[in-house]
Image (cartoon, helix red, strand yellow):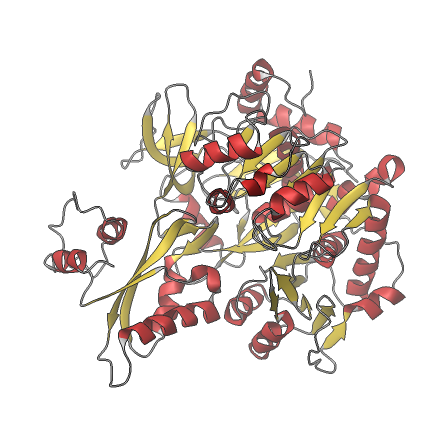
Length: 635
């Protein structure tokens, strides 16, 4: 019986029971049989739930890039590791073999070392979806530097906050990037952020758009000349299993982004295992995840998960609508993609267009299709299943988070029967529970509650960078002894899980977690704004969109509310990024607040959704009359 690959439903239940009853034996065998270690572990795991401290494969020594690249060279050296599909379909795709990837990563690793980057240093990577991004990430892991990738759609303010939080020593960026028919001035954004980033010593600049950009002497260096001079082999740093691998920022319910810290050994084992099983990956398959490496999906299922399994993974620079809405389907056909993994937002957007775009392509190469980032609604599920998967490809609706590192609840193709809108069953090693408001575990089926996980798994984030207390309070105090996901869920009559959405002040827009607090902080900087409150509301394409309730100070002559609304969205775009802009803005004279001054957001959510049926208990409100006023003026 294979421990690594799940073959049928009976096998799944056997493996799941083993993983829960004997987690040490289960993970010991998977880690031992499927990876290369310099030194094996003393203990499989060491857990202190009270202090929220977790160690996996204790005292083992490993380098994740040895497992992603080196060990494949003897048998798969000429196999394509990465297919780079550029933004412009007229530009030729690149096929990078494992041998070539080894050379590129070695050169980049040697450049980083020559520029003074050492084990434990933080390197911020702010690049478009080009091969240099994948190479830079792997080169950091090669030398033991901690990579922190910042999505190249974020503003200078967001970049600055992340660089300063982790104390990065270096930024790797490019002259610019392409996104559809737009060119993004990435170097300009970096230059805007750098004066307020005292820890940065060097900025390495890749060429992508061949734009004319200013270079600051002594700080900025073109990357290619440095690579040209570097040796194309390198020694991988020997890392402890618990040495940090990367910091990735995610929105929280306070204004400060959370730098989730993932470590080496456990993350490696879990992402490899979940990639293999959730996508039923076979050796000749071509896997394509359309995410950006700036998000956890890109880390785990564009780079690390596929490469750990010796897979061929597609790196896509473009967008689904450029040059037209057939772009995704054209790429699948061109590269004979077998597994396709994308976001419900993209599916909803493409389903609104003519069916001709997808029907032009047979898509017969596809074996598995997947959904990630947010719960997928039933209409989008059926469109995706019918028109992309041809009703023959299992649709894996995956649930997981930046904090979890890898997929937690998902169908396994050709093993788990799928059910529209349900993430279905937990993967081996994952123990989900539903909790009520009194912190009691809800037994049985056909129930709803707050989704928690009651035993740690190898790829759990170990802490929030520089703030373990916040990590404990955010994830382990609401339900002591359990990891609280921040999501609500429903468990149906057979035990399948359906994620019902966030239960905290985080809104998922187009698959991206957006904390309301940092957006409100940005809005409140506008000189005409007195106070603001942001909530999510259902949106046909994005899943959720943002609705702003804003109290203005007295507006002087010559400034009308429409202009202020535009200025507010521009401020959000400048400080956080365009993804955080408000779809609706309602100017109000007050907000529903309790006597202690807390905004009652559940009321604002219902108003934003247009649901005026039952506002619940409003007896604690200081100003209950404001509800009717806001309701009557809803936009």
